Length: 337
Image (tube, rainbow, N blue to C red; front, side, top):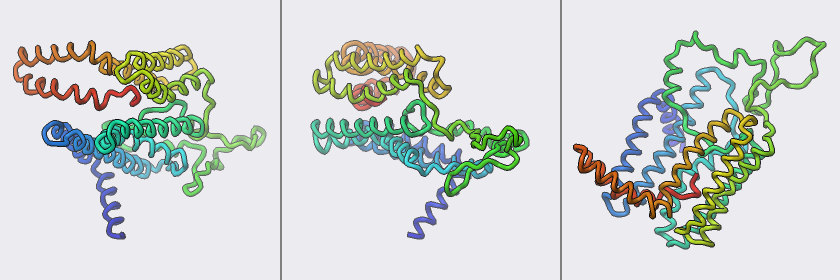
């Protein structure tokens, strides 16, 4: 056991010192999953397992790099060991494993088992997102809840001379106790005695829960409930029905519409996430039944044209044409976003 702990610590130290090499290894692991697809038996499950493990590895390495960066910058290390942080980690891990769990459930238990597992996963995600929205500092739920680190930006920061950017903690008038997480004001941060109200000044926006406007809260509740509503619609109308498709699309459009109506109340994080959700609306072009009736034939014609008229493109366009139906059936669920 001690030897295993030593290996883990040695690995974490190596990741912290060599983030660029780690990034190359992670990229290679993802490309392996693409190569495996369609080339061996049970390739769907195996390639998804490799892809899932690569995402989990990236997530784990991100936490190592982030912790090492905070320590090297002498920053205030926020002890994120509370319930909300553990829930974010759980939801992020579940989101990375979601497709693999669904594929495995279908292979082991058939279609009935698959839909039961999907329903349980979406119930767990919806409950977790509602809890985070109410009890954490988040004002909008991102997907995944803990996003990947921008390794390129961090690399540029490491190359910047230390004299050009002082640690933010040097200018802070508060500090955080490592064990309890309690925020304490420094002596030099106290105002003149005649202006003191003996209330702690919090200079970090993440340290306190901000009140979310009621209008935006309604839009976020609708977005969180959409996967469950869509699953219920599938049970009522069928997976290939236009009714379940239009219900999911209408919920997404209405949620975005409510956010845009009250854009002046939105924070920067909310605006960034709303932009991502607007881009994700394009996924409806490759989701059934729209894909089956309209998109598929047009995509295949474009790939055929490219394969016939663009030199060497046939090597890519041919396999891509064969894999797209499988990817569409595996990844483009209406409840995944």
